[in-house]
Image (cartoon, rainbow, N blue to C red; front, side, top):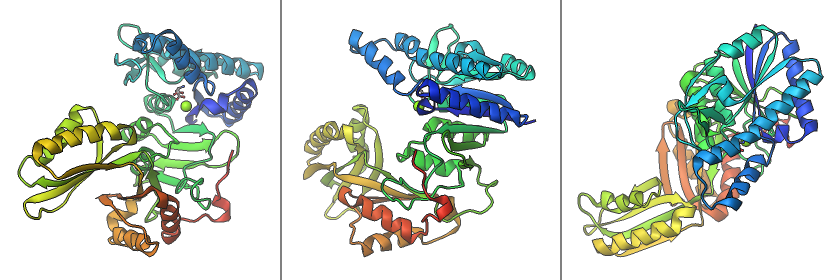
Length: 413
Ligand code: ASP
Ligand code: MG
């Protein structure tokens, strides 16, 4: 007998009707003879509503109190789903995070799971019950309620699957899988039947927001097979697993992009030891995260230094950079927030040379100027002008043969 953890996100439990649909799905899964543990999110919009409510009382509420408030969203859903299951004849047991004993550290609003007790859930399963667990929440050693950060129910599901040694963790959501790229940018995007943890991490951290990044890291670390699939349409979804277990590896799995970055440049910086630290130190001190960094080779004892930060940090980063440039006697500091980062992702790159060159050739054909480049073992990223995003994604998608065959065409819900 297999054990599956199912996770249903906010849109899947958005109203009583959808909760009943979910209950029926669970009952069907159970009728195949498997054990099912369910993790649910708050009903869609609820966590935002509760956050707004807190802010009507206090501009920056204490995170401990905020956790007490936000965790109620998921508590509502476990109760309603258990009622729906029981109404349809399926015994069920609701659990808040603290009732399971999902023990976390004490970093309220962004807690990390330390340990999960499985005794009570396993005994429910033995009695033929479905255990329904509130996602996104836990309890610290002192007995205080904690939450895991926005989107944290995915992490609850994966952590439970790891603790219960589940066959698979199934994330039911409002899309039917992970796509080669965003179908809103390239309508010919294809649903992937499988992708590796590593590739998914790259895709997720670059803005394809199907799963909380931390849940993918967790699944990779504990080797929990993860499947993303739709609550509303039938299908196999996308299986996320290790490289070794995937049968046939495509060269490129997908194209990710990130519209949230801005580029900063310091021109004519004196070229001497310690300059990179002098430029980036104050940026880090201002709590600004840096993504890509490029330093040119020096000419006339000066060099140019370019880096990217989150777009929201652009103005602050420029202020910091201007003052560093003055101090160092650099020629000029400037910023540009009309850029995007486009990345090709694929573990197949490890064994194939020339992917980057091919990517650059395709962009050149479209007359797209590349402003920055960075590479890793499984990724090539370029920074280009924002206005070329669609053109770049579509031409790369076609050049690398990622297009959909009819059976893999996107399904919109
Ligand atoms: N309800 C939480 C949120 O909206 C957790 C989750 O849905 O995963 O972020
Ligand atoms: Mg959610």
